[in-house]
Image (cartoon, rainbow over all chains, first blue to last red; front, side, top):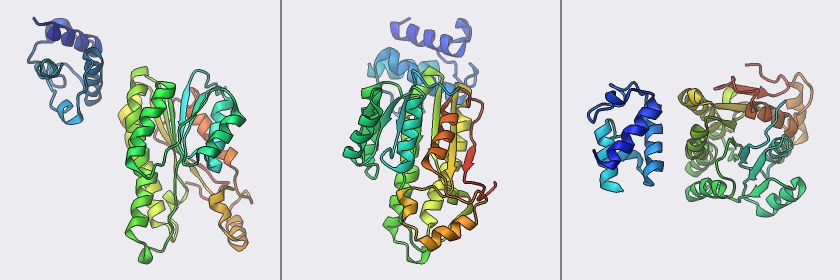
Length: 77
Length: 245
């Protein structure tokens, strides 16, 4: 697993308080991991900080799954 | 009660009568205050009066770039802002039949849009620290309406709806968003009324007098405090009983 993927999963586990094995790449933050819309805003904030990047609003709206986050961060960091 | 030590508060329109009183009240409760307004000299005067824990960040909120710059500059001088008081406001009164487009636009932009943009920009830090207070200074006329003020009343009513929506969005993160609605307060804005108008107004105020900027500042202080933390999405009317809503 890439370094980015590992860090993303760690942030998701910490932030949403979910079991690590539930945080698969295809897991949707809202549908599978119990996040509400504000949680997803905060997740994006946490990603921005961890990876030192800026995720614009229109890109942030498309980040719905763990994989979406990993892909965006991999392409932009 | 109402100890704001360690908290940082941004007050817009701090050169005005009400804004300066709010800055004084929050500062005397221990907050570090960032005072903003269009008149740099007036802000410096207030800074000199207050002493320590004061930053001056001039901004002309009728320009959109200025709003973005204010968010950046305020955070640059003070770090995360804990308390935002959207107090800056303008009037461009005219009968609706005579109202020009720019009279409508400028009032909506400065009074309503700026409040939203500042809230949006500063909420991030508040969400992270799980504590934040946004207090929007609206007006009695946002609830009652007032002839000649379709633009102003709409912008102030808009603030109330916006505050209720924001309050619901961020309540779970320890942020509150409330409004304070002044009635008639002694300020340069109400000084423009003539004596007959003032007398007519006073007869409609059960308290029999105009309010003071300090009356408004006290309400803001309460809503900005830890003690006010269970109050959100509300509009606190401070109007001597002129309208009981």
